[in-house]
Image (cartoon, rainbow, N blue to C red; front, side, top):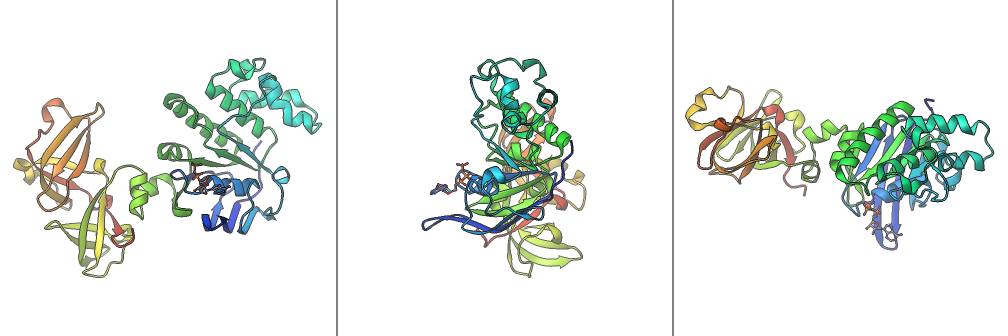
Length: 369
Ligand code: ATP
């Protein structure tokens, strides 16, 4: 049942409401068959973007194309696109089978029974076919909504915060379930969410939106490892930022002066101008940093970035111990260390060397935000 149909291409689309611009002119390509997430805080324009793909909102400028077909001026029902909303909008008086069959019956399509059974198997609800929506859990109802949208064989499935009404445990299950379904059917999924973990878990490509613009686009691991703005760095997890100055260049690396120390930053991971004397915000994720007691500083391998400091706080969270380190010359920073033996845990007041690989350092433009 693998579908074909081309990429979704948004070219210069924007949306203004009166004098307010909800989406600034945007170019975006969603590759065919991919799981694509529009991620951002409330009000950043992600739903408006999705609705322009669906045809529920007319763009102020620009075009929407599906493969070779310009669909900008097609009404929603003429687009090979279906939308699943957070409110499942199931018909309460129809059973699950009839809810899924509805679109096929309305179009007078033959072979309804086989198609609906296949679809219910795909979403693992074959056993529930004769139940009414209110007899199913929230996650099961959401799967019915997905089955009902997929049975019309859209080229693109749009999902607008579809898991927003579910509790955390169910949401996590459904994330994996939706990913499995997407892989199985091979249809392009465009998923809107404000939940970074959800986007990272499911999507091949994530577009991080902020203030009506795409701030960064990439594979989840790339965005996490190599954010280009402090907004993206902070939206996708926790980061430490160290104000630094470009000191010199060495091969493919930039040597930064920071907090009285030298930090090495691969040039490829620097999103800031790299002229000597320029300001750079050096970033590193807390879990990329190791801590060594100052008495054992000689054991720290060479070639690592390092800062000295003193443990200010230590909290055990189960899977990790989270430390806050006070450093004489720079702001406090966080370090997450996994699976520490109780005896090896560092206590507040301990003098430490914090060290990490230059490859885990990223550089941001200190002037951009
Ligand atoms: P949420 O997660 O809260 O739905 P979002 O990122 O999806 O947020 P949009 O729904 O796309 O955001 O809205 C973007 C901005 O456009 C918001 O500030 C919103 O108030 C505004 N907006 C959306 N629809 C309209 C409308 N019909 N008229 C005026 N302003 C609107």
